[in-house]
Image (cartoon, rainbow over all chains, first blue to last red; front, side):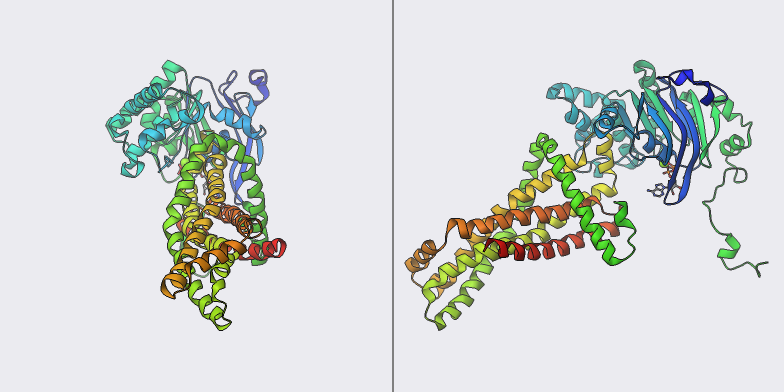
Length: 284
Length: 256
Ligand SMILES: Nc1ncnc2c1ncn2[C@@H]1O[C@H](COP(=O)(O)OP(=O)(O)OP(=O)(O)O)[C@@H](O)[C@H]1O
Ligand SMILES: [Mg+2]
């Protein structure tokens, strides 16, 4: 990889040497709606990088690009040296074996028990003795506090429990990269603390690169090494959590203080409200 | 899939669907070698689409056989040919009714459940989750069901035929008093394994492939909504029935 040898495309603040993921000039439109117009970003190895941004800006879409579930209209996405939009299916599957992905909606396999859900990636790809497999799965379930729920079916779980099972499934193979799409949704403060610790431990002890998509600034600040703020199809801000949280640009100030007015629109694009309600007078 | 979503017209939509279905068939066939790794999954599906359909197949087979026995007995008695009842019943079952009615029942019983199951997996992102875990849903979910349909359909048709003949025997021999020996000996002497029984088996194999292809295709490409799954299930029954009867005509013309 030659990422570091290319200062032309480096960011204004940091040039990441040999990033795990390098995205340049990403452009995407879905159903005619522009989602990204020129996104450049680097995910450094062994760090926790948070992606934040208003709902509907395309954070999940960005993760789908990174994992090759969705091809971009233009731009390159290089993950661990491979351009995911170009490589063949086998290479893509090889890459995905090294990625743990926590789906925003959990996406548990409803016909399998909690245990089998977590065991699924192991069973599919490794021929482990049953006892070892059992130990690995129970360890991961223990880490998310659900060892006792191993024999339940997904339909018997609450939303927050499903998130944690999905989390256990995402980390079960100790991958090179873990993508957490909103891991804190539906977690009570105790579970949230434990999950934060878990994410940090995985990152620190195993050196797993982590991408954290989340809205909770307080939680993100505690573990993330850097934050990308995504808004309006572009990277609106990038930097260390504390730096961004100070809110020195209009984007960060509005986003982190939660004001409705500012560069980040709260509303999905729509015709004029008064006009749509039929309250407007004669249009000029 | 994108070509299916925005049809310029209904005709173009139908043609695009057929084309997409054909491409899907090749993708399944491509995934079959990989799916041999999931042999247990295939066996499980044979149980689900095959063994679980047995009750409806047996019940319907019995009734169809009884109706056939009754109708043909009366028609044959006009010509004094009731001795041929066993032969006529067996031939119509083996060659036509067995494979066709089994396929129609299969589409309603197993096809719909395959479509709904896969459609729901699509709607709840389970197929995407498998892809993300580097498991090909075509090999893990679709191909086993496809193979199971091809395996189960001829077996179900055989069961249907057996029960049908039993039904005709009940009506003709037990109820209407036809001679038991005549019934069986006429049947065994004039039904040929290759030209009659195997004709039905070939048809069943084709129906099994087509019905499960349609069912899996409808489920796999369904819009991820409850309405989408509902429509897909309906389409499975409608398209499977039409395809079964159309292919039956073509195969009959060639196999005669
Ligand atoms: N399959 C699709 N077809 C068309 N548009 C889509 C599709 N999926 C997502 N979008 C659009 O893409 C935009 C980004 O969606 P995405 O799910 O990536 O948002 P997000 O940033 O993850 O939001 P949230 O924080 O609410 O999860 C949305 O405006 C949505 O309307
Ligand atoms: Mg999202």
